[in-house]
Amino acid sequence: MKRRKVEILSFLVYDRNNYEFVKDEYVLGVVDVFKKRLRLARKWSGLTQEELAIKVNTKKTTISNYETGYSTPSIEMLDLLCDVLNVSSDFLLGRTDEPSLSSSQVNHINQELLTKIDTAIEILKESKECIPGILPQK
Image: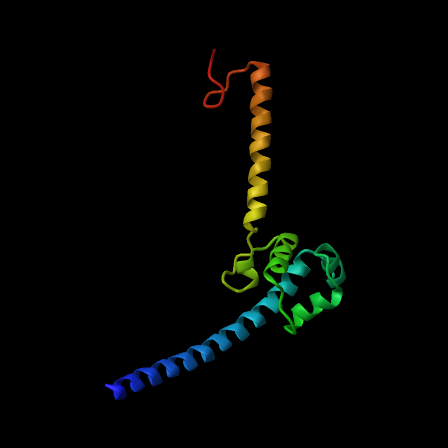
């Protein structure tokens, strides 16, 4: 019985070591993708490292360190970078090739659109015109 427990334990240690190796390789891959995509998104936005640093309230050297892979941002900083650069965190982290808007930006745009639609409906109601599908006939 003891022998079986030892075998199971050594199997778990082997799996853990293997997992750590795979995890480390994955992290290195993500950092490599992140630094390249951050620089690309910054250039798409027409910002210098210094201008981006000002917009996210940090130093130019911090942005430079992110772009060289010397350091990585916190989750809060990643969220700020995505908002300023108009890209998703999935894009910066290499999980998608679509540099789509972040969810907070989509929500903001949706709210603006709803406000404009409500305003347009009110204007149409005041003009008392009939528009099929939007304003019923009276």
